[in-house]
Amino acid sequence: MRKRKFVAGNECRKLLEFAAEKPLPLTITQRGPDNQWKVYKSTILKLYPYRMEIALPVAEGDHPGMEAIAGQEIAITFKKGYNKCLFTSRIISQDEFEFPSGEKAASLTIYVPEQVEKIQRRAFERTNVPGDMNVEVHFWSIDDAGEQHAGVLENLSTGGIGVAVDSNHLPGWPDDQLCQVQFTPLPGQESVIAQGRYRHSTHLDADSNLVGFQFVGLELTEEGRNIMRRLGRVVNVYQRQNQTATKFSHKTH
Image 1 (cartoon, rainbow, N blue to C red):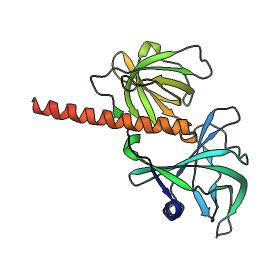
Image 2: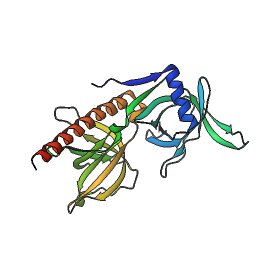
Image 3: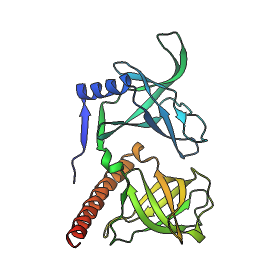
């Protein structure tokens, strides 16, 4: 098992300062009052010794803006180099930030984390399922748990999956529909069960469509982060098997 990589202390501080100076885009994950996962975008406005101000998170898609509830936990990720950086924090208050120009903007004050976890970004790259594997995926809308759909896993990353689905049995969902997905990425493993957002459906071949799901909420719980790390290891296995198959194909031609 790959060792988890954390940065803490002065190294953590420098990483956050770098994210603030750029500023790097932040992805914020929050569980809403309806118990559904919400995803937002923000940036760091200013760092203090034990707290930071970030721009009031803006919703993706048609979701409403963030409801800032003091004490609520949120997950934050940003990209730097070959890593995706992840930490959790808690909301202190919603405020108003004043820029040096005198302009003001709505902001959120949160606690500075004691540590940040680094995850290799290659784990978030969509990787095709090896040709000799057939991984069945079941998925259903959380609004209608009684109706299940099924397909075959085409590609996988720590951030989402692509599923080949019979064109005659496509779900008639709107974009961003929140779903539950279940699949067993490697033989002998327990099933992965995670929430995902229905992102797209594109023509794959004469009989099937590629349906894409983006995982949501994994960053915010230890169980979810364990799923992310597990999927990262599976992506590595898929990548190695695909490389081996490519080398073998070149040798036989």
